[in-house]
Image 1 (tube, rainbow, N blue to C red):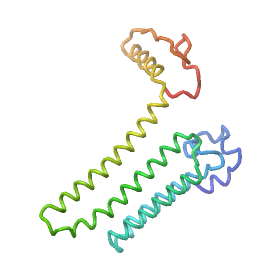
Image 2 (image 1 turned 180 degrees about the vertical axis):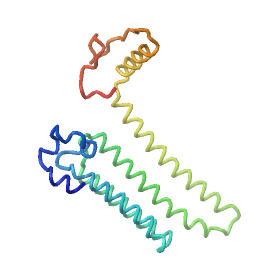
Image 3 (image 1 turned 60 degrees about the vertical axis):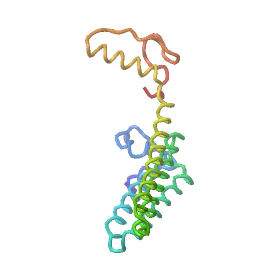
Image 4 (image 1 turned 120 degrees about the vertical axis):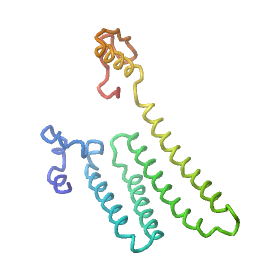
Length: 193
């Protein structure tokens, strides 16, 4: 991947001849088209830590994973490789969610030493699990909110209505909406419908 990107750096990376490879770099800024290499290295490092940190013990393996997630989040915030601000925001929130969830695994470890009171460990684990669950629900909610803000719902409803009409065999009229002419076609090419 790195060799491919170096060979086609500059404007030639976005030429029509290489369009079948665009899924690897089209979401990134042209100056950061190499970010997919960072993603590949990140995945390799995470797998290596998961495989080889077993000998170091659970605690050190978790600390190493936490450090890797923190580095990725820091790079995402510092470099901002994504073309669209929304995509970058979702990537940042996802990395933060993974970082916080990974950090919580470290907090579960001392829970095994809480045995002075009957049921104390269970209360601690349930409370901590609830916090982790709320963090993940907040992340999913923030992504759903971002998607809800980007989608043109009236245009989507018109397309679904038209597709359903074709499926059933009945032509259903599509009401024009703002940004959609009476012909039923979307007005802008960048709209997500």
